[in-house]
Length: 232
Image (tube, rainbow, N blue to C red; front, side, top):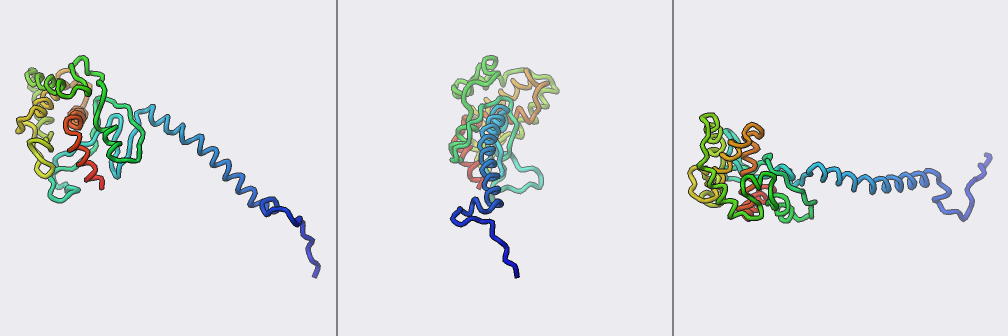
């Protein structure tokens, strides 16, 4: 039997003696380098477009908030004994998303509890940075006169919106038209204001979602605790 002459040189590292190993390492290095370039750019694009944050099965962000809603017919709660379920809702205002910190509570504080002044703030005389004055101003819009069609729309929205932390509770939420707190008056006035001034531009769901955004501002502790509990 003729022995094949080895082309390997003694003393050379395996890396240089094995072209497959060398090739694999080069490819891996290139992938790592490209990955480092792609990740920051992907984040910038997401942020420029508003962006979202994920928590369990929930997604929220720039124009998406979270709020407990009454159970639909045949719908089961995620928490036994509760008569509502947390759902994502589109909003009218738009927030700047703060990147995830890895702390779910802090992320919710950063991106569910709003700050600043929404685009309609000057017109409506409200600001997220002044929740009490804004609450009182929203309440004055309950006196707005609506057409019969607008009134039907308003009735549909407010009679499906719940108070979960004041007059009601997560187990037994109260429809805001049956709640006498200032937050309820503000939410009802808010719904009238949007229907009267921007009813042709925004859907019932978006108006509902904007009311929910303000409720997160007025009840931050209850809102965050409920979302965390249901996300688990």
